[in-house]
Image (cartoon, rainbow, N blue to C red; front, side, top):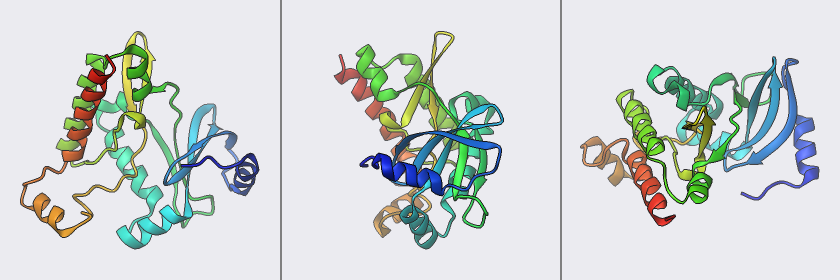
Length: 215
């Protein structure tokens, strides 16, 4: 996704309507569904995900959900699982389309590097990171949360007391088990031919391959 110009970023930031306890401190980047700002909220470093209008409309008309509420609920459901809590960015607040504030979600700011960059830097995939990935996916699967969007560029690695901790922060991918892109896939999922968490395990295999290829 092409980064907006400085003028566009300034205009976007000026258009934000936020509660008085949230101070925008910078622009972090953009993705297919949101612009991301860094902010301070009551002494906490947070990010503000400001959803793109086209993503808002798509999720409303195609899926029948508010994208901010949808992502917040998925984030919260995983953060509430004690066994993987440290691997999930903390969700703080959500402001849906009905809010008087800008349509957005407030989430923990994660300082680290992407899994992709870690593998390139080390020349391999650390075993502890892969094991954590499988633990996250299994716990999510057991609790009915699928399609975590855990590509190597979408997972942050935090180095905490000599432990490499993968952390998830992107939860707005619509699961195929809820909205399959075609009737054949819907039937395969319904009949159990294709597992609901198929894409998550496939991504973990891609982690392993990327680790092998880096050697």
